[in-house]
Length: 250
Image (cartoon, rainbow, N blue to C red; front, side):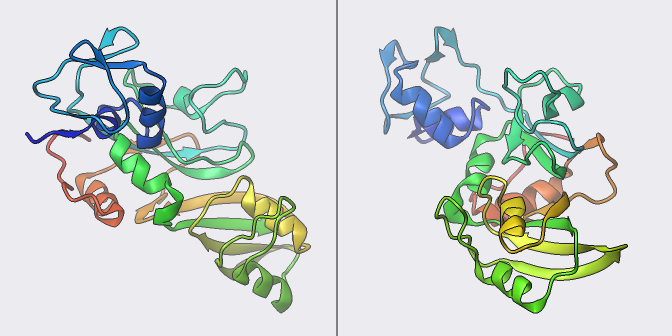
């Protein structure tokens, strides 16, 4: 096996995303062969001894990929002092894994959970711009001007201008209306903030797709393992060259 950058090895071992692993290394918490590591170091995980916070790292070869339908009121983080339940509470497995991206506590729908740090990095880094699709319930039917604003991009109250999005009317729900929204970014509470600015208060958000991965028929609070085809597709979209699933649980 050729030498690889340390943060890539740590991410693949399930320590966290590539960026999170860089922070750990930069903090001096990682030693390789009894020497404190620095960003940019390359190692061979089959030969070198890796220690994090005094504990020897055992390289994981069993990746987990889980699709979860998060209900409203559940946090999409796994580490929090908040007493409310989080997505980790809904998946009764002893393994270490974490959510890819976030849904705010009031939103519902698809969450991907994994210990594959390399895939996490590609799916969450802003520069890759992977699509995410939502069903959005707004209080009234939008006019052409409101749809046009949302599609072109809106300046939020913090000065950030949202990128162009695909927005269309899906169906009526009494006086409210379901929209279908496809975005390539995920600014904090972006959909709700855009809706408020253009005069379309949002009542409900359901994420139904991340890249090629679809929510499908999963009921609220239900989860399932991804099949190999779904994992392959996500890795291909992420541009991961070694898109095999030799060590894979389903």
